[in-house]
Length: 364
Image 1: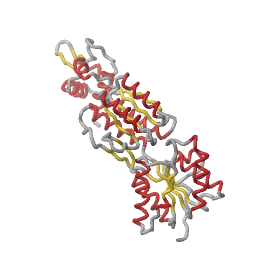
Image 2: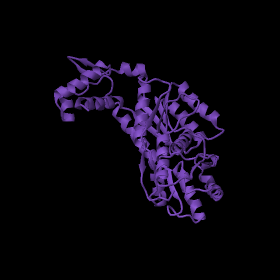
Image 3: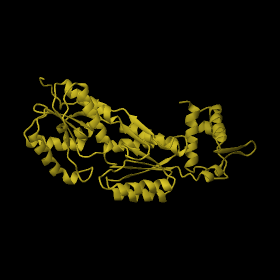
């Protein structure tokens, strides 16, 4: 990136943060050059573009001043809110860092909160965002069954106040809300192919809902079986519905149901749709005296989170949450600036497989 662009972006950020009040002259180009340890010509180029874009007014006798009229017309607060499942979760922390790194360069401030997968809390946070006059919201939608009315109310509240919205990690069916996610179909396809290449033919896919991410992973799982000329059976799709996406309060029950399902099915490997389901499957394995990978192979989504929790290196997909956060922020800023199409926008970030110690080859 050219140095004058870096200077321009930083001066713009300082303008938006209120470093210089209306009526006060900005530092001279020479003073800016000393501050940024740059040449006067580089500073002049940055200042000239800011003036051409309407952020500054230049007076050959008096100096350079902020054009507050532009800000007044726009009503810009340069504030963006991001609501994720849990800030303490390393995956969501990485997403927030990606969002913040993009916003900071453009002079925006980030207000972030955990919605704890609680729709009532998310609605309160959305109302707070409206009160704070944020320009945009990035959120991970909570798609618990039977709560569609609250979700619709939240999105309508934001959009009715002119707040741009981008969904992170998953999409909302039957809506035109822009989103950023990872390549769920490809990721699950590659995980399944890895198991097949190790000789596995009877593989279970375990999930707990029909949200977009899990449905996409199921598609990848099925397609890998079909492309490998293997017979697919609906019994391989083990869906155990839970009241909430985060089923911490139902965890013991969930483990018991998985255990019962495993007693009824013949399989040599398991693909779990996320790390929490992966942890439940491991508990069920222990109850059945199955060892990983000697008796059963395991792959999962969000393997890094699961590996940290159980202190065992599990093979699986690591989603690019930092890059997803960056993409969501860029998409949101384009919408705020009127540079993006408001409908049918979707971006997919590429994930990767981390090879651990949970997969073993078997004879076909």
